[in-house]
Amino acid sequence: MEKITLEDFIKVVQQPEHSRQKLIAYQEKYGISTVEFVLWHKEGIPLPITDKDCKDWQFQLEMFLAAEGDMLELTQRGRFDTQSLPLIA
Image (tube, rainbow, N blue to C red):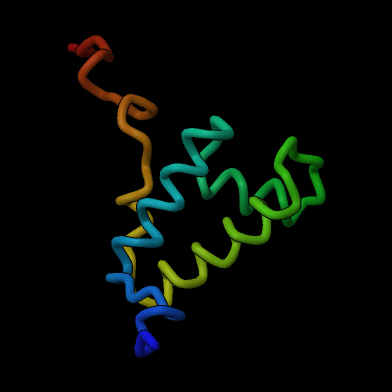
């Protein structure tokens, strides 16, 4: 008989990197930032997000913040790209 260990039941992850990757995946999947997700959800604005994803998105954000993750790391590149703005003289 094979010996069962804790690793058979528990997945060890590195935080805040694990939750950061999950949050970025949700942002890409639904096309909104985590900040927008939180604001819209709190305002009661209906979002085309599955209930399962909505709950996990909230959970991942809680884990990310609890592990002292930086919200600026969640900003999607290109969204606030200042390189494409013309210089004003």
